[in-house]
Amino acid sequence: MTELEIIERLRRRLPPNDPRLALGIGDDCAIYRPSDDEELLFTTDLFLENVHFRRSTSPRLAGAKALARGLSDIAAMAGDPRFCLVSLAAPNEQFIDEFYGGLIETAAKFHCDVAGGDLGRSQIAVCDIVVCGSAPRGQALTRSAAAPGHRIYVSGPLGRAASRNFDEVPEPRIDFGRSLRGLAAACMDLSDGLALDLHRMCIASGVAAALDEVPLFPGATLEQALSGGEDYELLFTAERSNNAPGLCIGEIIRGEPGVVTYRGERVPPRGYDHFA
Amino acid sequence: MTELEIIERLRRRLPPNDPRLALGIGDDCAIYRPSDDEELLFTTDLFLENVHFRRSTSPRLAGAKALARGLSDIAAMAGDPRFCLVSLAAPNEQFIDEFYGGLIETAAKFHCDVAGGDLGRSQIAVCDIVVCGSAPRGQALTRSAAAPGHRIYVSGPLGRAASRNFDEVPEPRIDFGRSLRGLAAACMDLSDGLALDLHRMCIASGVAAALDEVPLFPGATLEQALSGGEDYELLFTAERSNNAPGLCIGEIIRGEPGVVTYRGERVPPRGYDHFA
Image 1 (spheres, helix red, strand yellow):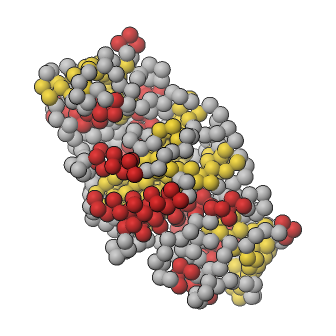
Image 2 (cartoon, one colour):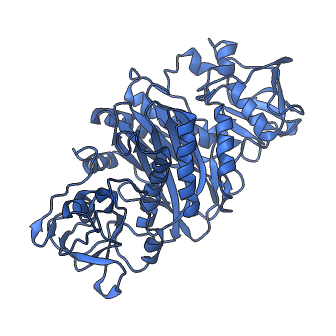
Image 3 (spheres, chains in turn red, green):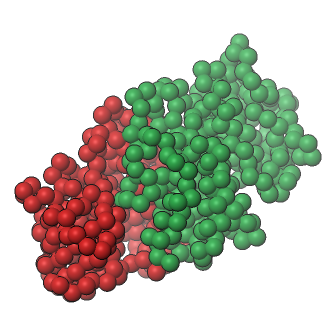
């Protein structure tokens, strides 16, 4: 089977496109015609065998997870998914087929078109997914807008992924993120654990944080909730008066940028870091 | 050094952004605010050690080549480069530094912002680059618009890359591609060799092609020109009356879709195909 034939077969499995996607898979580029009032959000995530998943993970689960991570970055900016580009190098055609199976199912669930990609051969499976999302102009949320006096929230209890051995496809909080437009100040998704990700938000915003609650997913330990990662809940801040949804876990304060405390004790910025 | 520190160091090496890029590296997503009259072009290319380059290739050359391939896809649609997203997994920080050195130099030359990316560790270097380009609405060129009677052109002589052992950074034909707006009908770039790429254009357009000239780069063989690949010249068709620039190499004809002949002899669709 040639690359052209594989691509043609994949194309037939895809749902119909958003009309803004003027040209999908099969040419040198995909073409997207933006609406006048939208700003576009772009995120890219590597998903590597032996780093982000193991050979024992089913390719279907790997494909679903790979896309879910990118969708979570779109949720973190309060965006709606528009399309994705999928680059995949894999050891054989069966892997490609099953990986795409899981990915297409997740894409359809979140109304995300598969607009293009690249295929290659590799003994170790390698995937990189770019997701494009959209928000009304000026309404995307960033991680650098946290200010002293803001309350800190998460969209749900933490530690689920670590307590279940990372065996599930995480649910990107697209609807929750969209509901935060105009309500939240800073927002990001919890991919590497609360301790490290809140530290990053504080660095980006030039502030410190004081936690007084860490809501645990049933069965999860505090350590899993703080540093387990892959929960993909949203972490955000809002003015006290905004009555934001979610679980309040503490407050943004003045202080050395990046310093996070939990009930007065300093929390080390520990979590998943490829280079630390 | 943490991932945050590596990203911060890379960010300082980047040139200032296009004002449409409202948010660059460092958040969950980059934000791009399109102009009203543009359509956006997206291409993604894997660049894998032992497939697209060898450990003996300098990381600087690999970085420059990786981006040049994506820029060539933008040229093929008659687009202007806007920004790129770079995912890179590499064995060490020195590789990342040098790879980015070559990439940033190429990005600056073609006015392409580095808007974001992802970093990871991998024994085998793995890169995936998405390039976003832009064209006035409705003016991007596709490979599926070739029609019987069109003349077939290339932007320059062929076989250069193969005859020089793929040791050079190819020059994406951005200016040439842009000059084809309103002039050319179908267009694509020659990444895998004339024989295979013209076959693909003919399949996409439902036509056949008759070649009568194959312009050779000095020192290249006909085989290298037909199937060597990586020349990244543009292949395009135009109405006879349009006086298109470039070298005329033949004519689009009615016939079994995908069939290419050279001076009456059938040319097999042979070139670089990961899955053939």
